[in-house]
Length: 142
Image (tube, rainbow, N blue to C red; front, side, top):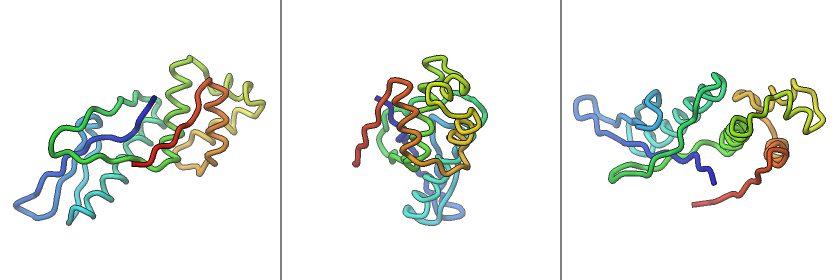
């Protein structure tokens, strides 16, 4: 089972106020916020952007570490998590976008668009792609 909920550390910025937010699993994910609530919103947006960049760049997406004391868990939007699940399932099965398009009987452009981080892909299409890759979606609310 895959999870895309990452631990973030919120460091109080004693000099300028607010909080600096970092993620040890994704070193590029650094942000800040004036309050804990603001920093939490910024952390989710930062996580989403870091994961989008890795997806768009064909990079590795590390599994989240277990949270340490003082860290807060941050999850990306559901659409991002589904796209990442398809991306990782394709990499694991060594399935190209062309291969997946054939399995789904669609044009390869549709697969490229579906995995585009900036495209609002319907979750049903991503679930269908996961099913074609031998996976299924389980939603967990914490």
